[in-house]
Length: 133
Picture 1 (cartoon, helix red, strand yellow):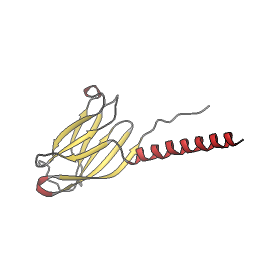
Picture 2: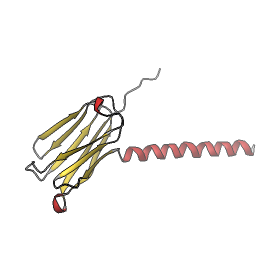
Picture 3: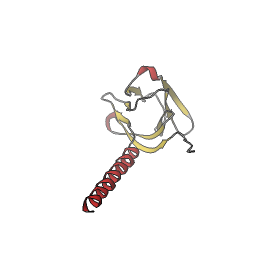
Picture 4: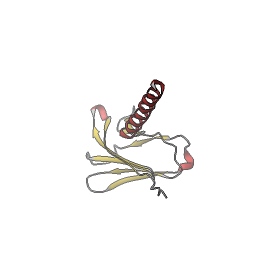
């Protein structure tokens, strides 16, 4: 009897750990925006494997000012791209990285010495709908 209770407790603990780990993974997506060493340049790091085109959009207060499509054949385990954002006139700038599975939006803020800081505003996971029979 004690063995069954112990095994049930271990099973519940394992399931809880898996659930918490999965929830934390969804809180912080593997899409990062970091400043580069050059002035007014940022790096977009996409850390997922993908089979579809990834779209990177720069958006100001009014509309999309620049869009880049990264084809899936260009990367197997993610990618890193540099973008020069000094050419954009606006200081209110967002970057949206979207794939069929995930859409992430960061707010870009000018920092010291031409280095930009990024703040995660929204991450939307687009899970496929599966019907149970």
